[in-house]
Length: 163
Ligand code: GDP
Ligand code: MG
Image 1 (cartoon, protein in one colour):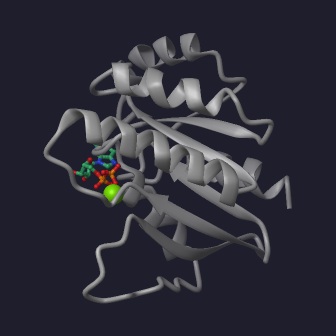
Image 2 (cartoon, rainbow, N blue to C red; image 1 turned 90 degrees about the vertical axis):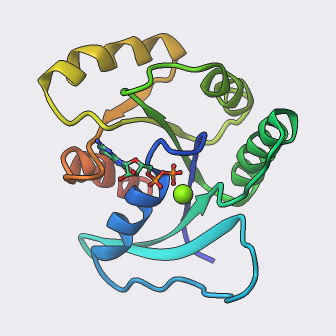
């Protein structure tokens, strides 16, 4: 029960960094099934007294590109089913990749809100570079440095406006 936000995107964009930061706000409860390889992590975040569930996707491993791509698409689909809102994370340091385009294609099929989060926007140079992500065509776009926390307040304000 409750409002659920899923974080999707290809590996290494910073999903888990954001996940940990969101949970750190308060009441971090991470479901720990030790010894089990999980492809999702669940936690509870709290922002200005509003509580919501967060799903961090993509803890899978694969040694084949095909399986890998399929896995990411699957994660995006599961997120679309389980979540009320989807955070689609990309990485300004790499720019838009083919895998980002794949995930974007899947996410365009949902009627649920999708927030495009461009991560690793650590400095003003990267702020300029990040504008390329408007071309993915998502209405809601946020620029973050999950590492420093910059931009997370605006994102969280927008998320809890749905609750
Ligand atoms: P995930 O695979 O999407 O869960 O990505 P991780 O959260 O594991 O992060 C991948 C790498 O990106 C790690 O080395 C992080 O420290 C780094 N990273 C995450 N957020 C930022 C950020 O805002 N700026 C920079 N420069 N690096 C980041
Ligand atoms: Mg991760």
